[in-house]
Image 1: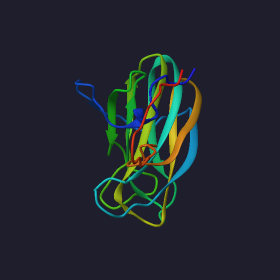
Image 2 (image 1 turned 45 degrees about the vertical axis):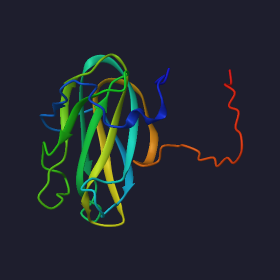
Image 3 (image 1 turned 180 degrees about the vertical axis):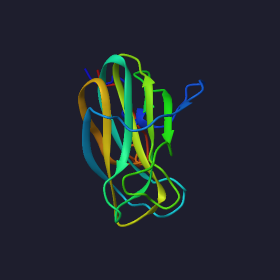
Length: 176
């Protein structure tokens, strides 16, 4: 069963709670999944594209990290987790030395107790990149299943809305 809320649930919303900063280092086991993001080198300070991963947590303690995969594509990586209510609960940035070190930054990691059920990880990077593409590895250790890339290179401003121009009268009928 996937999330039952809207597709824009990847957006950062703390739902009025304190988001806990990550701590610790990368997992020593588990899975390692390669992925990439477009390199956005314009303002704002964080990338305009992000990846959204989804996974099912069986037992609550999970270690999650992102690591760089080459000097040419290294960037300042960060992520936050989103629970099944759409609320950001953990943020990770600069916890351990990356395999391929970007300028003045470290890679994100956290060991946390996540709610059992589906969770999401939103991956983004700072505005300094080594090339046109940022490559990274998602590292997860713990009792997790069904890890999937839900949104690949999702643009922050892409709301999946359709603009309709109407002149005259408009009748809107709900669809069941």
